[in-house]
Amino acid sequence: MELPEGLDPARAWLAAFVGGIVLTVVGAIAFPRQVYDGFLWRYFWGPVDADAHGATCAVRSGGMTERLYTRSACAAAEGVTATPGYTTTSTVSYALILVFMLVGVLLLLRKLDVQMSHRFYVALFPYMLFGGALRVVEDVNATFVRENVGMLIPFPSVALIISPFIYFTMFGFTLAALVGTIYLARRDVLEAFEPALATVGAAALAVTVGALLYVSATSSIVGFYPAVAIIVLVGATLVASAFWWGSQRYAPYINEGTGRMGTLVVWGHSVDGIANVLSLDWNEELGLPVAYGSKHVINDAVVRITGSVQPEWLSEAIGTAWPFMLIKIGAAIAVVWVFDRQIFEESPRYAYLLLIAILAVGLGPGTRDMLRATLGI
Image 1: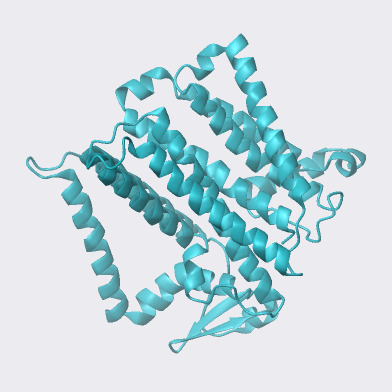
Image 2 (image 1 turned 60 degrees about the vertical axis):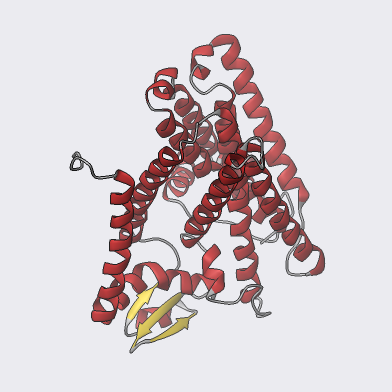
């Protein structure tokens, strides 16, 4: 569908964005029970509220919110009930919002005439690590709540770093850094915006990891198990190095489009896969005080299927999460293969944005899983 002649796509996107917010606010005010309680709170804010307070569920009734901490209490509660996590409605809604926001980013990059390059791709790499680390701050916060020692970050401020709102927080932070560094570069304050953009992300990452290590050193609730991070990072680096060497030697066409950027994709998804294996199957051997479980549908299915078809003695020896790691690595290599030179030549902005999103999907959760296990929370 083409826009009417003379209509600026960026202005049309902005009008749709503002119109959507206005429509939602008006609907919530005019029909609070149906729009706010029954939809916005139930599927979006309620799950975050319950998650932030370490509750089994949150219940909305008569304009008031109550947090409950047992399944039986949640089952007997009267009112609109929300539990931590995603539902089909919220997942579909977030997917649509993500696509809409990616279109907005694409239009903004076009408006700013940002030249997509390997340097731009690498400059955004620290932000993916930062997003995962920031999510662990909320995990520490939730651990403090469970131990009845208060909150590091009070509610509702902590909601900004709880999934899915953390994605909007990271989007806003990254966008501000991008626009700010481009502005300075075009005023000749900076020679190029990419190094400054990377520096901002690296600084945010360093501050966040530093804060986590400080809490670990000063609190008996949060531990420190560096072997986890060492195994994950070294393992992912070995996998990515082996991929680059093997592909360059025997199948260079795989990296024809992405070049060394493809190695980063494989590295990021290897971090996610290895961190999952260590957390699910090797937590006792690593001395971790927490038993982790699969939260994502694919991961959970892989673990269940492997456990049902693999001999019990083998499951006891190597665990049941290892196929997930192979799937992650294989999928990453397949994606790199798909991104051939033609894709980058025909639509470079779209190709780079999509590749960045693919890396973030693996590296963000992987960083979180790795740091959680490293801190034993």
